[in-house]
Image 1 (cartoon, helix red, strand yellow):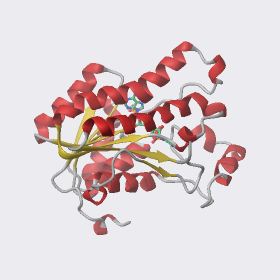
Image 2: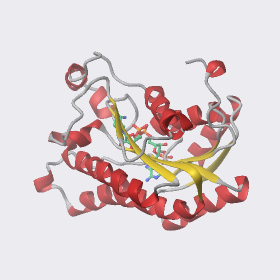
Image 3: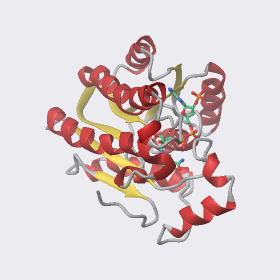
Length: 255
Ligand code: NAP
């Protein structure tokens, strides 16, 4: 949808999106900003943060950039401190960071890879929301970015998929803990060409296989994911909490 015709559903809101200097996170930050939110973007590398901030400013978005490796406690603390110092409030947190360091079967995966998957894909999300909770305004919203792979973790993405399944449970649990003032939902993207998924999209065979699993016969785009997030954090979704929304062109989405 053209930026000029987007609804301004998020005017006056402040949104943090982690891992948001490219790919799905960047598209989410851009969409929330175009809908009127002041956004805080972050990732591990200052240079990437600076470049993404410039792009969002060019689009007329009010944006703050903060370097934040989600696995680093000091970085997480600084992310929230910088947000409150700059904007004085917090309404929306999108926990988007994830890694996929190994394609080994779970049965032979190294402990180091298991630790990394758990630390970044699950634990950092929990710690992020622990840090966010005291700051979130009434009517606030949390989104976890999971994956459609979480519904059926298998093959080279099995353990990555299991961490994404965990986010479905985390969404339910935190929705109960933060109710009734803050809603917690989850978006489960299908396959979207980005750096993270580049191994799949480099090979015609895996590309065709993934595509054939969709009913719509195409891959998703970062903007498709961003549109779903913008809906879930807006008042249009004010009676929705604890839910997982698959955005996957009709891929299998039941546990
Ligand atoms: P991406 O295009 O590779 O972007 C990754 C972003 O994360 C970059 O901005 C990167 O910037 C940042 N980042 C990486 N590690 C980080 C860390 N430890 N702490 C903070 N920032 C970090 O990835 P993507 O495909 O958009 O994935 C975003 C989310 O969507 C992930 O949760 C992923 O599991 C999920 N997802 C993706 C797909 C897909 O097909 N692409 C499908 C389902 C779900 P720096 O390098 O500067 O840190």
